Image (cartoon, rainbow, N blue to C red; front, side, top):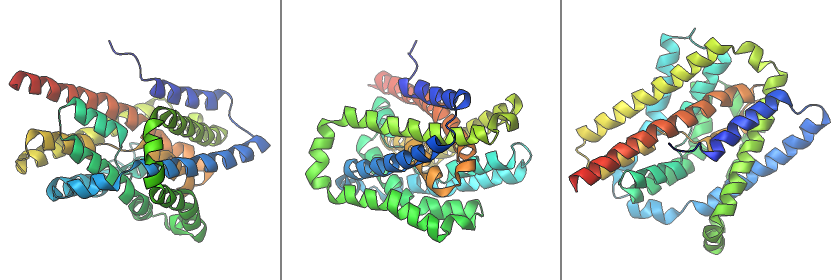
Length: 318
């Protein structure tokens, strides 16, 4: 039996800590400044780590890369809007915003690559797809959020400034310094991973502190959380089935099929949490990221099972 993922355990711990001891008063303002600095550091490091060469070398497989982007930024939003239209009363309005927000996010990087490797898939293509998805997401996600959620306020002057200062400029700076710092980042990737995850935990704690003060747990009972888990799981299942169908229809070799399924079905917690913090008021950010936190854990569990299935199939066919 596998041990629980330490990061997922810490993520739950951050939510529980915010529930029991939410940050209040002057401490909240200080924590918000620290959180903003952490977000900038995260996107700076992302700029250093995301290799442009990986994109250039694998863009020749344009059909696979195009389908991953289409699943990430077109299929997900369409499914989210459809589910909301068919069952608007399944979740409360703010929770639906969170579900629609996660539909607009880019794919993951680390877990997509790791699971593709476990499944004996096309690792190089997954590196390209995940990297390209995250670069595109910096520009596309805010526009999708504005369109899908009908929140024109997302494109307010202040929001555009926040996106530029906290997300875009640090990322561009990281890309510009990549030739100088990439080897250093590779040598210290374990330390940087801890830094990234600690930053995410801090942002989650801050967002949930606001949500607890706003009464998130009085508004979300057990039935509401169960409905949210079912919605997240149903969304993931639909995308997995569609990507599997697309891979078969395009007659992809098994390694490319694996890459499409495992990259096209993922949503990034590392990008989503700081983006929510930038795009939404502090009073609702905690509500917005709850569907993403749950989806993140569901996708890791289900996609690990899928990766193991492909791995076992590869061994049996060898």
